[in-house]
Amino acid sequence: MILELNTQLFVWFSQFQFTGDSLLADGPIFFLPIFLVSAWLYYTFYHKDNNQRTKLLYVFYSCVFGVILSYTIKLFIDIDRPELYAKEATDLLLSSLPEKSFPSEHANVSMAFATGLFLAGWKKVASVFLPFALVMNLCRIIVGVHWPADILVWTLLGIIAAVVFFKYISQLKLVKKLDSFIIKIMKLIKLY
Image 1 (spheres, helix red, strand yellow):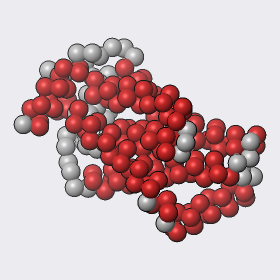
Image 2 (tube, helix red, strand yellow):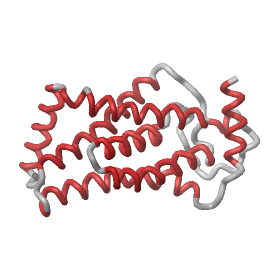
Image 3 (cartoon, rainbow, N blue to C red):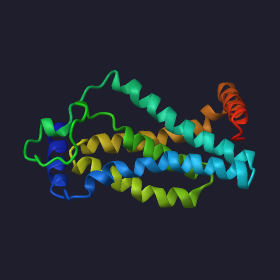
Image 4 (spheres, rainbow, N blue to C red):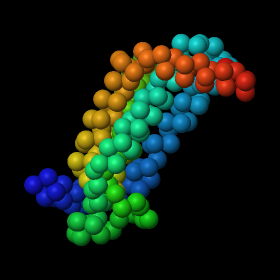
């Protein structure tokens, strides 16, 4: 039932292929490190603010927590990419992909990032990034990289990963020690 629904939705989404969707399927994910590094440099050199740098670390940790969750689940769930099932959608724009579709790290990390920004208090930045993340995730379906269910599940799990990190994991002593370690490294290379 789910495979049939996924196939039907995939075929429906694939009719929207256009020349630029492969760029949209990957492009927005590159905003994450650019934003994190730029904001870190801003809060280091122009507006020294340790609290904001800590929030940046927490946004980063939310993404890392999402990736750890993703790779853990990947050990137990093995789903092939849509193009192996839906032969009707043949004009895929991305090539040489891994064979496995689930989980979608793009959906997971982009939503953990957007949610982390929101929880860190950068609601305007989150509201600017969120539409790009949603378009990126839809384009991942359109170009045949993921099933619709992959994107839906990992969008939700990315949000959950950020909320769980900010509410619970951020309070652990291990996270405080990791913060201290990263800050020591940053001081050593003059970036704190």
